[in-house]
Image 1 (cartoon, helix red, strand yellow):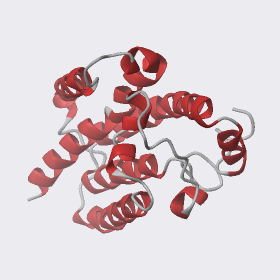
Image 2 (image 1 turned 180 degrees about the vertical axis):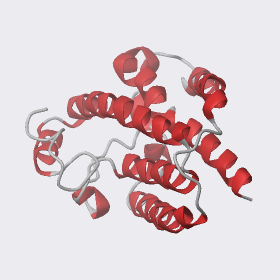
Image 3 (image 1 turned 180 degrees about the horizontal axis):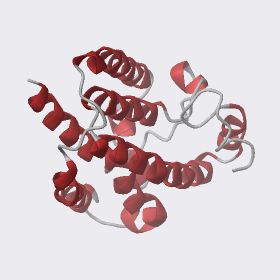
Length: 199
């Protein structure tokens, strides 16, 4: 059972670790993607899946290397996983599936151009990314796999860059309303200041 859970944990971290990279393909060239006649997702989804294969292949050799092995690690992991699922649920309040999928960012003139600052978004600007971080941490803690911790660190680094680019894009769309929101609400972790106050 633990071998199965470690494999699932590694695969989950492979997918989660590529989410910031997926958006890094989009945000620097958002105008290019918006100019496509057909949905940019016809290209972007296969690119993202190729990322899974690339990251999986490049980390497969280390997927058995563990920092520790104990069944007790699954207790805090379950709590972190539950917190991540709760955050996802809160993230959906007032947010449509189209918004969660980034359609307003990629489809010109998309009708859902609205800034949501209530609910969990009154505490953090990007709660979905906080949910992703919780899920990766849960799998890392539970499995004890070096590769899961490494992929989590990779996602934090690429996610930091990606959030900066996403904030710029949101500022272009919503102007002073977003700048004011950004000044008062942290990016991902309540209380953090990295992407607040002029950054």
